[in-house]
Length: 351
Image 1 (tube, rainbow, N blue to C red):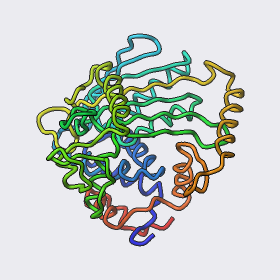
Image 2: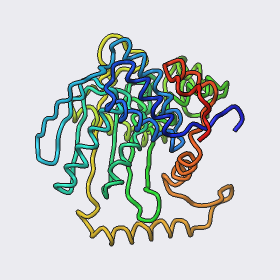
Image 3: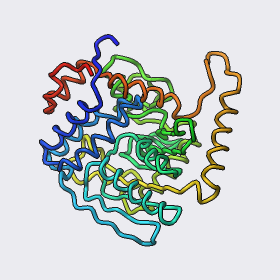
Image 4: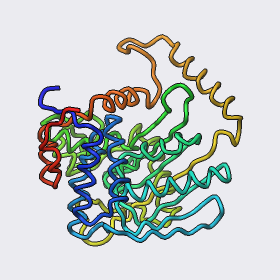
């Protein structure tokens, strides 16, 4: 790739840990955050991987995120708990939240965690995949700062509010649906602005309340839910699960990790994991999910498509490539990480 270098996973991980530890994050916690962000980079979701470190570092330096949070777990039922993440880094809170949910699922067949006092956590699919790796179907919902207008409105009340679902798929890569409930994410809009590109029509309204493809105007205006009323309704459900139900902020009161100065961001997450063996023997489930994917693959592709694929299949190929050859990073991104304290990246990046 022109203007890029391949950075090994080990080098990328150690770089992220260095950057976080330098801001007072314990090494074990820094490793979990690094793993979560790199998991997004490995799947090709570069806007939600190590690119997030710049914003996280600034929030740590300004004491808007706790480098050494105190986690409190409240178990209302044996299979369910609420995690007060102590205003921690979002990836750490989400990692611990899904770990609790999976542990409960191992004991009871199902586990759920509501996470409060968290922050932006990167890519939701990373945490849903944690459940799929343990023979569970995982569901992750998270609310975010108010940047999206509900259907029919011109003022924001909803976030991009991601939803992810992951399921083990036998000999195939796990099925991972990872989506914002807005047409696009704000990080993708900012990336388009950096690259000098327009954003697709239907993503946003400008500050005048009219549709825009100008990323600068979109950042001053509001994002739109996908599919009109359907996406708007789903985004509201995510806010209910992650915010109203858990006790986190909701209804437009979540703040941005990038800009808030007045109080904690207040993000909430909802994590659910349930064993496929709660319904079928795992071998039977595996046989059936493999058949489902085989039937999907056997369908004739439509004009303009090479094949019919399922959610998570493309990112699995990207992951295999990047595990083998390294994560591609532009020189600008490398220099940005170096400026944060990632001095290891000044060494040759070949693996």
